[in-house]
Length: 192
Image (cartoon, rainbow, N blue to C red; front, side):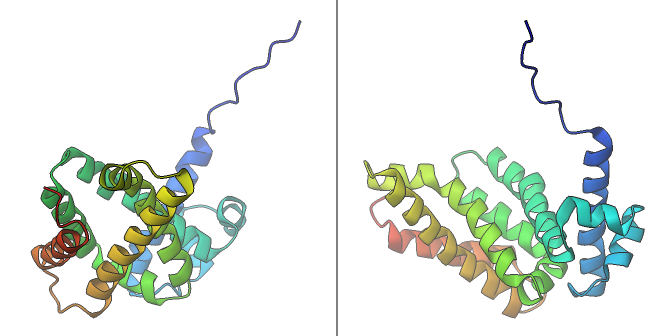
């Protein structure tokens, strides 16, 4: 009798080439200050073929958005998790992350993939907000929890994007953290 086997883990070569492409994307967008980086340059910087880039991501903009989501997941989400339940510390970690990577995020939010970038980041932040929405508003159906989490993530993201794009250089993470915490206190005035 045949037993179904578990799907094999993603091939290490695939993982390495994807990681190399995302690292190259962050580096080249940061260095050049634009998302208009030729696919050939991205592939060369990652030491892979253009064909492999298209196979993994479909196109340049999808690679750039995946690189941004990966950067947020690897650095921001991991650092914020270490701040535990301290909202001020979590917001400050987020502000510091965006300030540190402003040279990458600014072109990402104003270039060819801006809509996809904003939508992806709002999705990441919205998923992180679901537990908070349940804590704040009690028993809501799942669709409403998702909508409220998306609403909060979109609003907070708009403030972050405004700060990243139009903020005076150098960006001061504490200023963004203060703005976001003031908004949180208005939205949830009776919460600690």
